[in-house]
Amino acid sequence: MADDERASKIEHENRMLRRLRFLVELTFATIAQDADLTLEDAWEHVTALKGAAVAMFPGKEDTFDLLYLPRFSRLLAERFGAN
Image 1 (tube, one colour):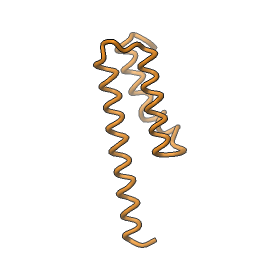
Image 2 (cartoon, rainbow, N blue to C red):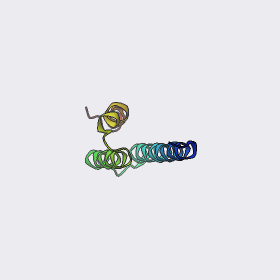
Image 3 (spheres, rainbow, N blue to C red):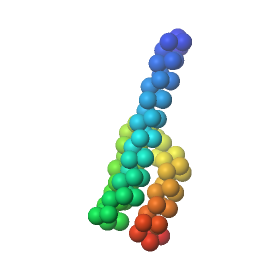
Image 4 (cartoon, one colour):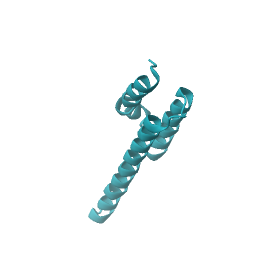
């Protein structure tokens, strides 16, 4: 693999990671700040985020569950008193 091809792939992955971080922060802020959001709606946002993450990084469902699901679970427990 040529150096420029490798650099291009690395840049693409970095771009996808930035996009995922943005989506995570946007989803987190939406759940935290939207007073009209129900628990079910909040879980739909998390599920949609996971779908987007898996579309960007196929085969990484377990990684999403390990990294992001606990964070959103804590937020939902704090916001809605759910377990």
